[in-house]
Image (cartoon, rainbow, N blue to C red; front, side, top):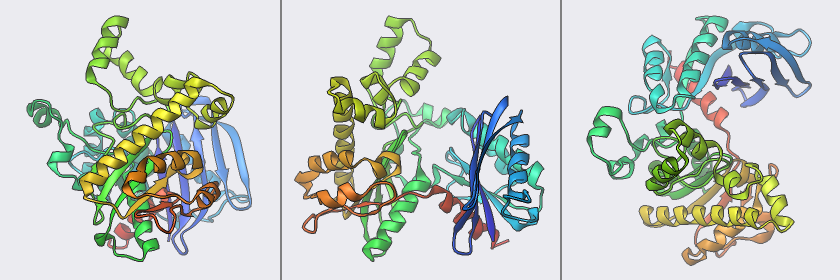
Amino acid sequence: MKILVINAGSSSLKYQLIDMNGEKVLAKGNCERIGSDDAIIGYKTKDAEIKKNVSMPDHGVAFTQVKNMLLDPEVGVIKELSEVTAVGHRVVQGGSIFHESCLVDDKVIEDIKSLAPLAPLHNTANATGIEACQKVFGAEAPQVVVFDTAFHSTMPEKAYMYAVPYEYYEKYAVRRYGFHGTSHRFVSSVMAERMGKDIKDLKMITCHIGNGSSITAIDGGKVIDTTMGLTPLDGFMMGTRSGSLDPSVVTFIQEKEGLTAAEMDSILNKQSGLLGISGISSDDRDVSAAEAEGNKRAKLAHEMLYYQISKYIGAFYVALGGCDAIVFTAGLGENQPALRKHVCEYLACLGVKIDDDANNAAIHGNEGKLSADDSKVRVELIATNEELVIARDTKAIVEKL
């Protein structure tokens, strides 16, 4: 069985074709700048790597380009389109409607669109991608949707409700939803396997730290709390996002600067975080280089980030009533030993001890245990694989048809 995994953005289309016999990636790539005449398609297999400019006025054309690459006589990995058994789509916001992955039908598409006010940039693009895929790949290939928010649907009311008038929850579904659910789900499952225990017997804190970041408290395989909220802006500081702050900061700056709500939203989402504090970049590699050269604002950005991550882990340790394992994953979590070291130093009061040699070696695809043998909490680096989660869910649902 071959599953095509799709992550459609407003002007992009990431894809992977996975052979579920051995869970091997046959081909992957990204369509960029969809909607322009100078769009780019990237395509990579074990034998070929291509990047070229093409015209992609819409997602339908982008899917046609993907199809053509997969079928290409020279670099393609399938001979007939029928070899694609099903398509799995990442959808960011499932709201209170979707608590698990499901087969696509007209009602599902309409429900995804109805949730667009909660994720305007993402859900509209996700729905557009599903509809465009249906036209290009036809009705023969079942479509499945996997939601970022679904894994977090087990949170209790005390964790997901905000202390604003209850009517806003009733009228507009204002509550905490959480994101990166497929990543937290994947690494928590792998962590249980590595510990040789049933996930139902474990309490763990998973840290997805990249340009967008979130931390999740998982008790017995079920989420009890997470840092991201109504939107991915909540939580701790990220590449360009502010994370949580005093709400009055928003109104104060708006009034002083004469900003609209949209302009303020842009500042908090696109001009804050590491970029806003360092004044250098949202890319941690650039911030790290600047800190090494003595840049004080770059150093402050990192100090803030490490401190905030540690605070959330400490809070979730209390919420869980203890913790068996802490997992680091995603771009920074997988490739920034200094971040892991500083965070774990804050957690020494909880009995966390890191093995410096193991931590420094865990980078660029090297996974494994980071904690010292006498650490009271196991600390692990696990490379996330959200695409594989989507493919597995798609396979499971299609096999029931």
